[in-house]
Length: 487
Image 1 (cartoon, rainbow, N blue to C red):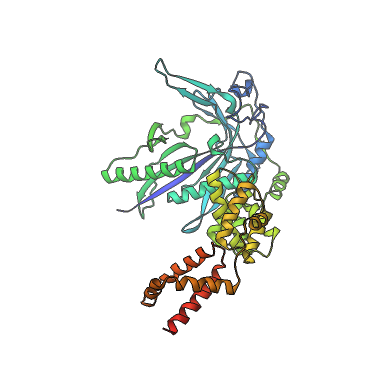
Image 2 (cartoon, rainbow, N blue to C red):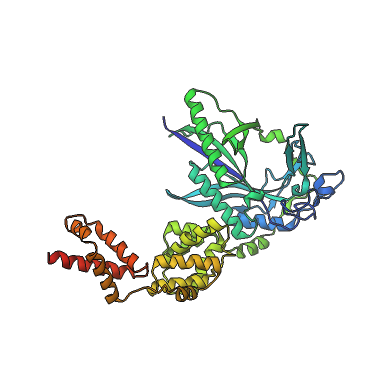
């Protein structure tokens, strides 16, 4: 029997405001700040305190809602979500339940199967919890709590169960992260936990319309963890169905080391949280004119940018997807073309996603701090276009540029790397190569025509890689034909 996965995602994104959701405490970098240094009676949950809504957080929520084509509610309500956990000092979380600020949106993703629309059920505001650190020692275990994160604004974005594969799950997560970064509402730094994924996974026989029991995998903070945890659960549930075992409604964690899910608790339903309206906060009313002004300020979003790159520049779809993953990469690409509009955009895209991406992966540098600004890459690619150097030499030159910050022209001149395009010089090199390899030449004429590529390599070696490849190929073909005719 064939099976089909039914997957929905809940994404918790911290909003990049200066202060917390309901108090004036600063939002601090969890990797740098002293634990419990950015706290006050409000985010500590002390009796008698009153929360006040952060206007910037509301604005950021509206920006995200508009980018996801959501309906922005003119009036939404905050509620108390009651549950006990050591990192929740109040004993409840202020969230939105029945009346969220954003609902009924959509996000278009790109996969190997083409584009697909994922429906957004809701996006609602809430506050983050504190952070627990568990310490195991031989003389006893204990836990430490840091409340710096407690009260940080969160936007929870919930999809409908529209995803059917791990590829779609990753594509959605990457697309949403890119949008949040383009909007400037979230850094996307998953290592710091500012964006966290939770996957709801169930499985059913292919062709069935029934929604079977699902499990929720909590707190996945990397694309790799999201992919592997989802794939693992799909495999587990298929195996359980094959054995006739029921799937339990439960919350799971992900063991990164052993790459398995583990049970955390039975899954709560909404009534278990005893939601009721937050008595200390009035209804959240957003003015239509304010929403319109926010909509007017939205930047060009990743999907629109990809379509423009394909339409206006003729860039291949797969390359456009790589370029728009981060706005700074997309900006770098267009800056190269602005520096030299005569360059072929597809060629520029190939060099950025190939050579520059390779360098950044190896060095750990970002596009903002590499030593080759867009104008310098444009100058190098113009040298290739003018046949001053060939593509292989240009790759070596680019590496030196990235290492030293020197300009292409300086490297080419000092190292004598100008390409040899002189027809007589190349003809001489081809002739010498054929004359000094009579055995291989005879094998070529005997039917082993793949040796023409070997001859090409020998000529390029004799020219120390500086010969114009196309001129070499043309001359080699010419001399081989002449020798074949006069045999």
